Image (cartoon, rainbow, N blue to C red; front, side, top):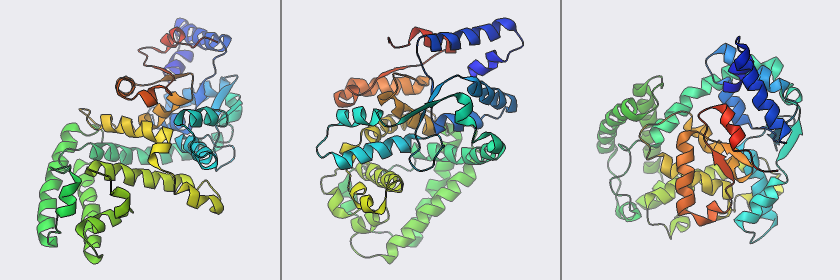
Length: 363
């Protein structure tokens, strides 16, 4: 979007700068990589002119790379499509290392064409797509804001608390939830996404879902732990080695993500896909580490979701441009996790798009 501002600027020097950067990129053999997450971010911009210019600039690019979509022909792929290929490789190669998974995946996820050919299927429906993307933006802000709220975190994160705990009465639980809702609303105002539509409505809708889940627990059978885990589609035997509630949280997210990915597979492969473990999935493991760090950040942003997905490109692109916070988070991960560090390629944050010329990998 920054390049497009200059590329179509009234001032000739601005136009020349943007043109020079693009020409230099291509002269070095560099090819821009686009995913559906990039297109979503572009369409979500509130300025019509910036969106229009950005689309036009992409159409003028002589060659671009894009992720192959595993489920819809001619659609630009997303991080789910990368994980679909990873899962297929895991299924077909027992005991394969994480590094080998990413090396094999890289061979099967890219397509190349002109910018015009890439965007051709979308142009007639661009306004419809943009309305759909904008309609989802507030939901992203809500998810990002709730996911890092400290007021709803358990005071004791140990799993032993759940295993020894007993269910409260619905009346008692409702009173506690009402107090928590007020605290969550305040926290969203202070630390949530600044552009969220209504912190009050967000908190209210969230706790409605919590109460509904709680009511469901009352109609099930077994220990408190068994009832609780059932709400997340988890069996007790899956958590026998767990020590914290956070481990349950990430297993629940992984299982839901795995279920979504399984829809890209034929029925005869789905059972195998649903049996894949967290520890074998490279893109998931990176997302998980990023999420752990991101939830400790001072303020939430709706862009956190896309930033988390786009960070997965560091395994597969030669150079990934990231925002300032993601750059810091990836640096932390590289310091602490040698296994993931060995798979992460070059990434940089830019204060100006022309800086990319300083970071292009050697051919």
